[in-house]
Image 1 (cartoon, helix red, strand yellow):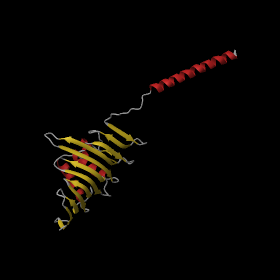
Image 2: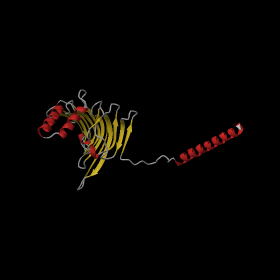
Image 3: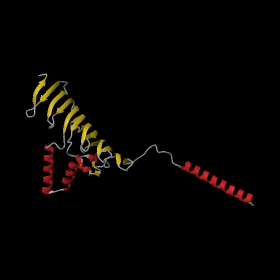
Image 4: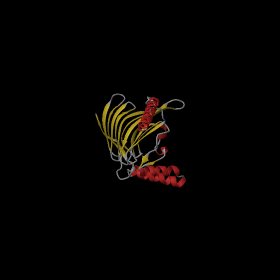
Length: 242
């Protein structure tokens, strides 16, 4: 009797093992192969905590600016709704740069094209960017460098823009005046350097802490080279060659 029971149990075990092997082989055989192409309108790469570290998106899907984990409307960043590309984020929930681009044919002829790779200062706006901006009649491409405020976060400006877009009448006018005062105080920073080409003129342009052009090295469209120095008020004060 024990031998028969032992044999029966062994038979059942063999049958179960066989079923398990068949099921496993079937699942492996039916598992789809890794895709060679993936078509999506937006792809969010997130970190271990679920926060975005990179977003890849087409036109109309690019997220709005993000500061301190808050995402603002796309309209807060002028023109963003027309762009495609990549946006980068840090662990603080701040946007820290991106690669944005587009090319649009205008009704009635002409076009607008832009390419932009930038990196942002801590809690502030972009401080270095490689840009291509082309409106057909005028074209500019090169390296741009900005100085940004260290005592006023970008979120302050984004909040003001958002409130201005929602406000009307005197409230909106007051907010626009507040923004103008902030610009006058230098809270939004200033561009300091441009190195590139504008309308077939190769240039190195240096600006002071107020954003005023103070020196220019130019090779223009006629292949004439010159070095210019400017003062704070009247413009060019010295040129080489004279």
